[in-house]
Length: 441
Image 1 (tube, one colour):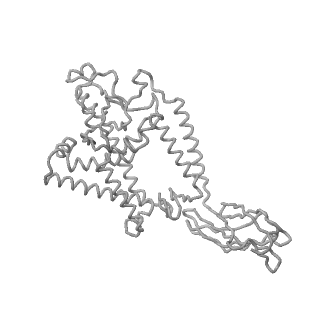
Image 2 (cartoon, helix red, strand yellow):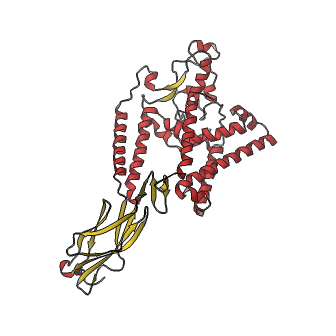
Image 3 (cartoon, helix red, strand yellow):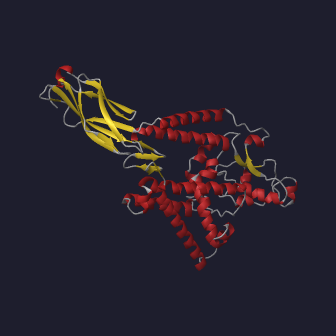
């Protein structure tokens, strides 16, 4: 099934119903619904979730984060990584089987469209093996058109998280935004029409390093090692596999679960539902089920073990720090830069003047703030700054003039600029230049 050799064997999965497929349906629908609805929701007058790259802002459930909050993004990334490690140690490839976008869209969109337009797996196979005719062309064309429409909806929805749903869907976004929509549509169609399971096999790194994340107590889909594979219904009377191959024909990865653990397995449990269906009709328990290597060896499954304790501790610690940082998030952002072209000036009244450009950002998503500017650490200081009142999400840069008597400062001195508003405070450390620098500017 090589993508490069030209000998790829296409997979035509049979339809299967069962307990785990119902779980797939509900989880997939919930994830897709959230993906499509979230860009249209707002909180406190701002998007519920939006990544505004030009403004370098992240809107998230009532909070506004900027580039200065980059450590929160780093913490979120670490939390996601260690959550994946922790869940993998306990439940194996649960992410791949139920929550990965690749699995969700293939199961909920692509295969449903194919079943509707072209029929079940065996029907599609027979049609693809046959000659091209009007019926085959019509069905293939209809499938491409429907999937293209779904890919367009997906591309527009994904870009809505960056460009804003209203702007994008009303045509008010920029050319770059619609170009990215086109890129996503092309990528989605290439994946859905051709790449499919090869994305999991060849490109996704998770399949390659999952063996380092799991152990003998990690949950996986497995075939009963005590069962033999025999032809005929009589095999079931002895607790053996009747070799109906239904577990193979329903597998979206094209593997035989009876061959043992394989990196290609995504733990979607389609084979479990298939075996439950077949063996249930024969009055026997399923031979394919969620299990662990320890359970197959007759040992009890251990949830608390060094691997899970370490991962769980790290996840808890990172989550606590991240939650605390978000709850204590200061909505004021302040930056100070010296006015270009001059270090200092000496005024006629004998004061040394330094001019700065003060930028204040109000990251409070709902409240207007009036800011008071003060200076600490300079003697007999006089401060001049325009009134500063900012609407929610607004930022402004204003000149800040700091004057000190000449006899009070001769060389460089450190001091703090303090910005106050409604119980919030930000302090910025900077320096004041005196006449010992040898003249004006």
